[in-house]
Each structure stands twice: as structure tokens, then as C-alpha cells.
Length: 336
Picture (cartoon, rainbow, N blue to C red):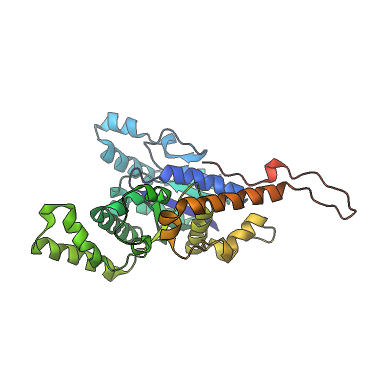
């Protein structure tokens, strides 16, 4: 059985950065991983591309040949891939049992109401992939209630359209401390608590949104989101190793990877990923990422340096002789 992440999100939400960081992180913990580029406009990737949709169709060629704009060109390109799934399957089969990350396009139409991407994902399931959608939203959306509500609606629609295990993620959470203070703790936004508390702040955003008509509309939208009870968010700072470890743990639970994919010869890093202690142990994520971010960063950086130093120490052989130092190639690396 093969496992994969489907990385979706609006333009600028950090999809390609996430794919690059997760690819490096999986390599560091000893999990074979390949990244597949499904964005026909992405002509430059920081990660090594195992399969690239641009080998089949390029956005600029579609736009020039059929006189389409960027959005229409992306839709056409994904429909082209849908018509050439045999080619796509052959490319994926060459990856063997690798854990796969699919870097998807940023056009929201592709995962809210257009069916090409959904049909491609369904075909992946039919050939044996266990899929989980990782939906990224820029944490900047928390600074404006209207943006937050819009992202909730987008996330909810994507969950209903894709009909797959779904992990919603607030990316770039490490930048949140530099924005204006939030009216509520970060937990309020990640757990999607009582949205009626945002109505007064929505009315403050724009004078045109004041009045009974808009108040009723805001409350109706909030009630609709809450009635589904589906959306909540994880938080992510790509350069923070503990944050990446926590998110991977959540994704592995959603896909079922953590319940049986590992074998008897797991590395220390793979065992650590199954350990409950790999989860973030911060009782209040608002304290971690907003109130005392710099202090937590220093502590975690020191812990990581101590661990690397420990790995570099000489090992003792049974006969008392000192073994060679651990090779740098054996140490986990993670750079973004």
C-alpha cells in the first residue's frame, strides 16, 4: 500500500515551500519520499521533482495555443492530465513504494467545484494510494475576520468536494507575532470556536457592513459553518522541526500510515515519529507562537543543538575501544 499527501491551497499559502520542507524532513527521518508537481505553471521548483505535469502539458503552451488566461489554462491542463492517466500511472509506478507528496496548483476552482482534480485523486485511490489532503491557508487570514471567515468557507467547500481525509493547516504561523494583535487567543481560530464573537469585528472592518441586514448575514454564515462541525486547523512553521514533526504525526494518523506502514527495521527517527512525545506539548499555542515565541525558539534550538552534539559523540565498542564518530551522512539534516 502506498501513501501520499495532496497539498492544496490558495496562491501564496506556501505549498511549494511546504513540499520542499516536508521532503527534506522525511529524508531526515529515513522515509523514502518523492514529490510530484501537478502545477503546469510551476517551471522552477526547489525540491527534486520525481514526476512533473509539465512533461505532459505546460501552461504557457496552453495559453498561447488556445488563447486562454491563467485560470482557464490551469483547468485545461488538469483536464489534459485526466485524459492521460495511463501516462501518469506509469510515471508513478516508477516510484515504487515511495511516500509521495503532490504539489497541486493554487487555483481554488480546481478543488471547490471543478471535477478534474477530484477524478485524478479517485484514480490514485483505485491504484492503491492512501491519500490525505493537506490544505494550507496563510496565517495572515487571522488578522482580518472577513479573511478568516472566507478561509473557513473555502476549507469547508474543499472538504466536501474532495471527499478525502483532510488536514487544514495555518501556514507561516511563525510570522503571526509580527502582525497586529488578535482579538482572541490563537486557540479560538484553530478550534473554530463560537464565530458569533467575530460579528462585531466584521462590522468594524467596513462601515458598509453595519446594520441589521449584514448582521443577520454574518450570523447565518457563522451558523452554517458551525452546523457542519468539520473545520479545524493545525498550525505550521516550516522551519521549526517540532512543528513539522507534529503536523506529520497528524497527517500520518489521518492517512493510516502510523498504524502499520512502519516495519521492524525502523530508524530511531521513525520510532520517534510514532511516539506520543513527538506531539507538541505546548498547552497553549497562543503562548508558543504569539506571546513567547522568541523564548520558545531559543529553547527548541538549544535542544536541537544538544541532540546533534549527542549524535556526534564517540560510541563505545564492547571491547572498550572507541568507535569512529558518527558520520555526518548519518545525521538528520533539515534545511529550508
